Image (cartoon, rainbow, N blue to C red; front, side, top):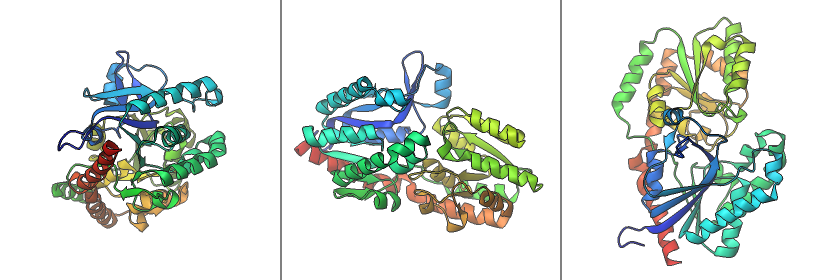
Length: 405
């Protein structure tokens, strides 16, 4: 540990739930959650950060990558990719794939001074057990989502694996030396810990300016034309729930209400959702914008009128907090940490198309102003000035213990 700096030389970040992309030059790009602030969080406590994650299939064009993803910083960050066991049944059962992954993880564990596990997949569960049983290194778990929900809402194979993943994750978190939960209550209840723990979101919004709220209020009062609704999340997976909003818009169209347009921001194959809009006859009011860099997402959130988080699973959704920081009226499903963010009046049962439609139809200027002000104030608790000091203190406690181990 450097004098006064509270750093270790090398930290391993096991994040195999994260999928990066690679362009033709060999440059890696990460999803928007890995913003500059996220990287800095780790680099403040180590000299070298080693990230072990997964990689999307194929190579993408560098222009597309730069326009849609966050480039890996040039500083001392090494990236290694495990083979994707979840690609298909053959990959999941392959002993060679399993052996390759474990050898990679084991090698990096041996070389690292500290290990942070940021995931809820079964690969990390097994790797974590190796750390406990063989290398005796202190481990910090970042509990960012529910393994049961993630697996259960991922097809038939996911339902088969859900119990194993759930109990493995419970065991990991129960026995971890340090646990950082992103929720206040939800994940703590499902995955209780015996070690040192903290509840602090991994969302770091810029310090909010009251002028943002004033501008939003003015926009609401002077609104003309259709309302723009947005959801940020992968369009290639069912559990983000965009299809239920699309179905709600079709229901509203049947009622003669054409006041809304829906914008879906996120990576993944949107073919299923586009086919759905075609079958329902509402293709003209649903727009798929693809993935965007974080700054472009924030800019777009300033332009829309309403935000919706219709997810089937969540930890504490970053995009919802960011939308709230823009003074956006927002509503979402009663899953994960969403009820910790929104007023009870702005929650709906997951998959409840009629409830979504009824809520949209009931909106008026008074309600929009009320939700806007309430959300803006609620988002301020996620400003770096309020979160960073607590998080840094917790992580540095962990680093000090690692250096003394």
